Every structure is written in C-alpha cells, then in structure tokens.
Length: 218
Image 1: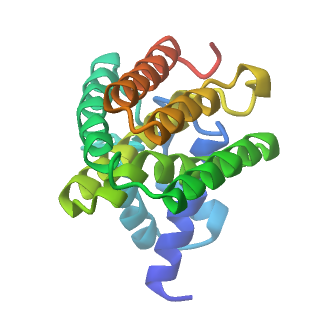
Image 2: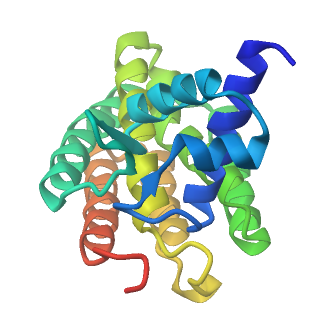
Image 3: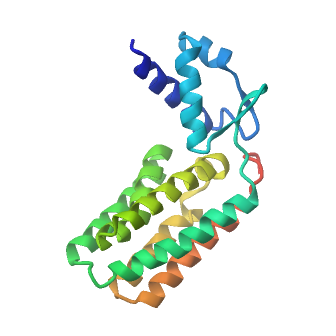
C-alpha cells in the first residue's frame, strides 16, 4: 500500500471517529492508537494529523501531541457572522440570475437533505449542506466569493461535527430543513431583502444551537 493511500486511510479513520463521537472535543489522539488500529507506520499518520489540523478538527500541541479541537464560542460567532455577510451578498448577486432550472436544483438539494437526515447519514448531510449554502455564489459566477464561502463552510463543518446532535435529533425538531426552505422560497420570489433575512435567521439559529452545546453530552 503506497504512502499517499495510507495517509488517506488514517485521515478518514480519525475523521470518522470524530464524526461518530468516538473521539470527543479535547481528547488526545495518539499516533500509537492509530498505528495499532490500522497496522501502519507513524509517517502517514503524522501527515493525516496535519491535514486534520488544517481542517480545524484537531490541534497539534508541541511536545504534547494531537488533540480533538474544542472551538470557542468566539470562534463560532466570528465564522458565522462572516458567513452571513458573504452568503447574503451571494444571494443578492444571484437572485435575478436564477432560472427555473436553478430553483429545481435547489429543490432537489432540499429533498436530498431530508433523506440524509432520515438515513442518519452525516457525511451526506454535510455534503448537501455545503452545496446548498454555496449554490447562490455558484449561480452568481463569482469564483472568489464561491471559494471563500466553500472555505468557511469547511470550517463550519468541523464545528458541526464536534457539537451538532445530528444522530439524536428527531426529524420534527431539525431546524436546518425548514430554514433552508425559507431561503429558497425568498430566492424564488426574487426578494433580496427576504433572502438576506432568511439567511441571517438560519445562520444565527445554527450559531445559537451550537453555542449552547459545550459538550456532546449536553
């Protein structure tokens, strides 16, 4: 098995353990544990740690090792407030460019989001969620805006993975589905103000929900 393949396996193993709450915020992730689990040398494991640190999922502490990140409420607030600004701007740019085909695609994404929740498929939910949030910027054709929104989405994913109660939240208590629907409804009406209001309401709702969870056991 080549080095790059081993790095990817180690990365996926650790990320999945965090997503499934087998590794929790603040917990140490040792090279020995991963090495024993996967029966591989430490070199690709170190490379996977660097990749996970770049994604905000673990923190590498000199002379101490790797620890699952525990994002602060201030970090959450900073990321989500910036997302409000950028995604509202994307909606403003896109709203008058969107065609019936674009709206059909957004409807399909909403349906796929519901299915991901029903199937309790967290990886699929994160993929669909990212597509929904980036879609207006994609339609607008501003690649720099799209790249920044995608980057912040990736950072937000780490907060969702660490704090979200995806696996235990009943479908009738899920907030993102109706909130995404409100955004799409406003876009279909080509109502810029309503679109921005719906985006901000969704972001602040998610922020409040995550900020209340300082532990996965809450």
